[in-house]
Image (cartoon, rainbow, N blue to C red; front, top):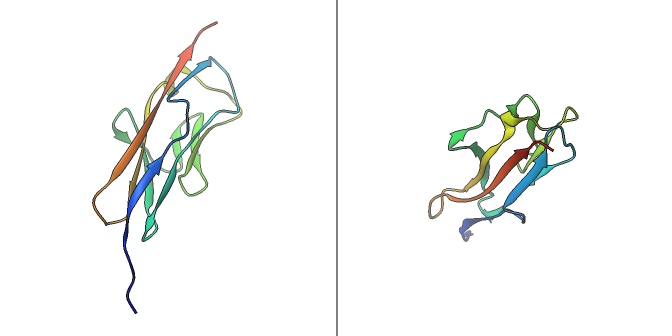
Length: 106
């Protein structure tokens, strides 16, 4: 029996830039990774690997790293930055997609 390997692919749904008011809640980044073998999904914030499952005081990774979600306390300036979802399954290298979180004061 032989298996076919499929390179990993990644999709982060729009928008590419999230503009949130300080303290806003119910916001999440979603990353869909596909391929065979099933890819590993990791997140980076401003190029620095995040520590799963906690990214910052108010942002945590859930659902096997596929989603980053703002906790009940709401977003702070600490969460502002570029979030990159990296998908890797050992076939054809790593692929990535990014979204930016801007925190504004209203």
